[in-house]
Length: 177
Image (cartoon, one colour):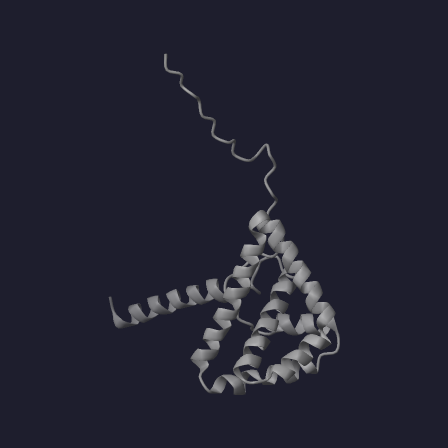
């Protein structure tokens, strides 16, 4: 295999990994309430990671105070998505998502090194300039915010009815004579 072929294969592999790891905006269903909720949660997490890494907690607190009702609404939409998608394990899956989100964003910050704060602190100025929740939704959709995985946010899969669930395995008792 030539050097060019190896580089091309590595590039395709890297692009596939990046696409599968970080692409939420590319869902085929366009704009949906869950999609917006994932975007807002990712922005909120990225701002939190930035605040903690760059000693900007006051700026993060200002963002949360300004958009508190919208952030709570988006959190409720996420809760609904996870409940509809994962049923009884919704809280665990939601918690895992939040943890993965913070981890991926922290790793991105660590890999950027000392330039991270210079790059990310400007986001606080950008969100501070927003006036409405619609502005925030448009900002989050346009911003390339890191996600840990790609979630299908068009609609949660339907919960199987009793008729479509696999039947419980029946066991027979064998009597010995």
